[in-house]
Each structure stands twice: as structure tokens, then as C-alpha cells.
Length: 412
Image (cartoon, rainbow, N blue to C red):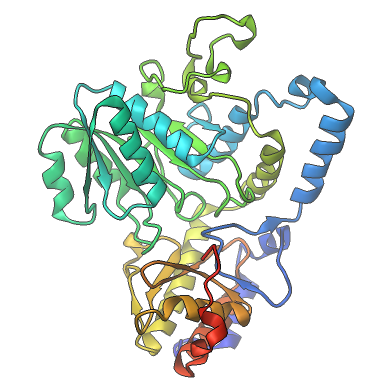
């Protein structure tokens, strides 16, 4: 931080092409929010949009809204709004269900498309990915293996010629490490494996192009960088070339070719709609749509440039106090978060709590990882400067050692 002043940060904010988008969000006074990588801030349009859906579409128009308000098509219309953010075609993405459910669908579908029997997962991945992948493998009689995707172990495992599906997170949830999607996908394909990417920590955080990267399947949540709200429905991507062959296991009514024929026999819908299952959360869809409409005004390259500048600033502050970082310093390998290791064992949680008491909200992940997410749509450079100063103060003065900061809450 010695290389930049607060006044220079104010100047950067004045010149920021994304600055106007901050006004699209409700941000509490006195709070610097560095946890948008866990739950995004509330768009100002969301309360009115949800109220209108409840009071007018549901309250007044009742069941007619399935047609008149477009409820039935929400999985596809919202999917088309997600598509530009991930480099997909509008007919390759649907929104609905949760990340765990969607991951199960695509892993099983990919296994059914292969004569091989190994699902290769990522050691240390977010738990739901590990649990779901292991469960899918058990149910299908496949074998579940785990490797370190950031080492030669990945290439060696793929070379064994029995891997049907590779499942990886695009950005690691603990460290913020960004994986080379095109290169890894190409490597897996060279060895005959299909690839499923988890985009939970990258959609809305880093530019990507699933089509150009030749990705097979992907899933992601919408309540982080996409600002859909707590528990917002997830999205599912299936490459157009796989639509005809893919058979997902949760063959529900909404994924039927002609749902209102009420046939007793299942026939999958054409295209990505075959990955739908049951009725969608229409109230939550209304909240998500508000977030996606804000994103339609953003340029992802500007978002990425600002994110890297902000994370550079915060990493420099961590270096001042000689605190360990596990986030890559190379831009090409960094997502939109900074992950720090506490200066001594057990200090991570109380340091985060001490920062929260100062109005700087980050979060904690075992073992002793302090995470700080950078969301360029509503975060200012001056916010990053002030948050970094607070971090230095909390650590160097031992403020975090106060007993009140050690009391663990249920959600960390």
C-alpha cells in the first residue's frame, strides 16, 4: 500500500467506467463489503421487482401468470441472460434447481455418454462437489478418484485412459486460484474424458468463453457475484453438441418434450431444456432477474481489469505486514478474491471478526484461511484502501486477541 495513497484511490474512483453501477446496489452505511464472493449485495431494483411478482403476478393474475408473465419460460429466459457472462449460446443455459442438483445431473449425464467408469475430481474442492460427485459415482457404479489439479498429478491421472468425467472448479473457493479452462479442457479431451466445470466462484468474476474453450458441461450459483440473493437458483450449461445424446437422471415433468400432454412415458425435451426437472422458484427468479439486469450493463473486461487492480492493492497491504497469501500473484492464475493465512494458528477467525467489528466484512474458511472477495460493480478503490488499512491495524496492534472475537458463530 505504500505505492498508492488514498487520494490516488479517490481519483481512480472518479475515472472508473463502472462507477455508476455502484448506485444500482443497496450498501449499508459504514460497511465495506468484501464478501460478495459468498453472498452478493442487494440490487436496489430487487425489492420492487419481487413485490410486483408477488402482489401483481401472483396476487392479482394468479395462475394466468404462467403464460402472461412468462413464468413457464423463466428457466430459459434467465439462462439466456446468464449466457453472455460465461461465453455460451442462449440456448445452452437454463436456470433452476441448486448447484448440487445440477452437478448431479451433468455428472451422471456425462457418465452415461462414456464407456469408461472413472470420475476424476479435485482434492480439496468445495465439499458439495466432492459429496455429489462421490454420490453420483456410487449410484452409477463408477469409481471416484481425486487429484491435485494444479500439479502434474492431473495429467498422470488422465493418461490412465479410464477417466470418463473430469470435474473441476474454475476458481478454487479457498485460495482464489484461477484454472486455465481452455488448456485443461483440451488436455482432458485429448485423453477421451468429458469435462464438468464448477463456475460458482468465477461467473461474474472473471471473463470466460465456454464455447471457445470447448467445455462440455458447467454449473454455477447465482447468489455470489451475480447478486441473485440467498438461495437463488443455479444455472446449468450443456454444450449444444451434447443435447441430443445427454440423458440426465432427474427426468421430471418440466424436462419433458410435451409436458402438457401429461404422458405417462418420459420423452426428453429438445435442447438444454431436457436438464430441467420440477417447478421453478418463481419468487427467487424475480430477485435473480434484477441482478442479471444490472449485469447486462457491465463490461466483463472492465470488471476484470478493476478486479485485478483491487486485488493487487490488497495483496500489497498483506505483504506490508508479512502475512502469508495463498492467492496467486500472477494475474492469469487469480480469481477475484484474496485469501490470507493467519499469522499464527487459530488467529484467522478472530482477525476476520475484528475486521467485521470495524465494518470490513470478509469471511473465514478452515484451516485458518481469511477470504476477501472483490466485486467491482459496487466496490470502490477507496474501499479497498480503507479495508487494507484496517487489516494492517487489526493485525499489528493485536486487536484480534480480544476474547469476544474468538466466539464462533454457526456460519463462518
